Length: 432
Image (cartoon, rainbow, N blue to C red; front, side, top):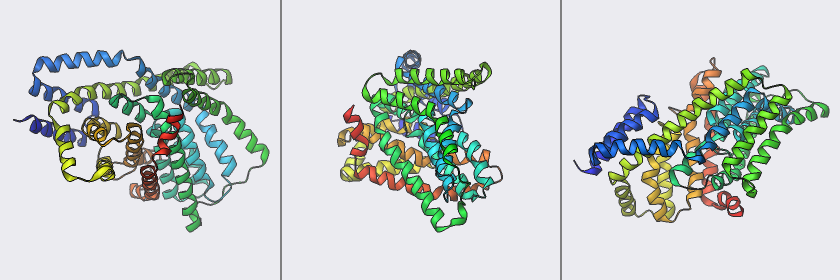
């Protein structure tokens, strides 16, 4: 059996395991280990498993993952994320569709804390859905805006998606974080515009909320100041070069713990809950990374990247044609696979092609992560849709999917803009 055939069978088998809901890491471990065993022998497979596990577990750069996750979890249990929503709600909640717009802003703020789309959708779903239901918002709009707004968590730094991409492609985590800021703001603005358009055409979808006076607005904004300061210090410190992403993660986690302790919102029980959740999430991410470093050599040994590169050269689609085809593949895969699994599976195959084309890997990272976001709300899988469904149990799943589709097209428009104007992604990293 030729190496290419072994690689193809292995990838098909891996896709099958993922579709029947075998955990991503375990599926990749099995296929990668057996594949290397077949192509290079049992000793090579066992040696690589032990060496890669130790190398990744001892990589100091990966400390950024648990620290940023801990920062987001502590911000959630202490109510800091809720106060971001309250500030946005007090400012624009009284206009038509204002609660939905406040939810988008709240999701963006929480994304800057957690780096997790699932955590953003779950937290804001618990906070915002009840408020929008109380003011008779359309369930399609309310659930759609929470599911779509949650996707900001994978683009606005600190982003787990960028961390995984950086490790798999050996790019700078700090530059990827900076590259995600302007696209994240663009996407947030596109979501706000979508809410405005929907509520202008169908006013009954987003009735006006209660008016708030300046005193209430000031109180709500004052409550959000501590967490805004944390975000400014961590992201600003990376941009100015005062500290690395790992140091920024430690400073951010330390600051939210200190703020929570001094404000009386963080006790030992809630801190333990946040720390325990962070450990579980970090373990999941680490397992995926270790499995990725096992399956990547298998894909390389199978010569699949060279075959795919040769095929794309034969198609002669040119620079943008090849890039758009690769992103289209991500869009299709996003309908069936979880985002991190897609990164691990596809980057070893597509990165050699991207580098041969002369595509800036930082720009490509932003495009890929945005495409992964679209997969989070694409049927039939749409992880964020199912997260929102777990909170809004009385809303039919089909209505949630219908609610997110306008936001999906807004994301597609942003992807086209970023394709046409690469400097939106590359300007801030170039200024670091």
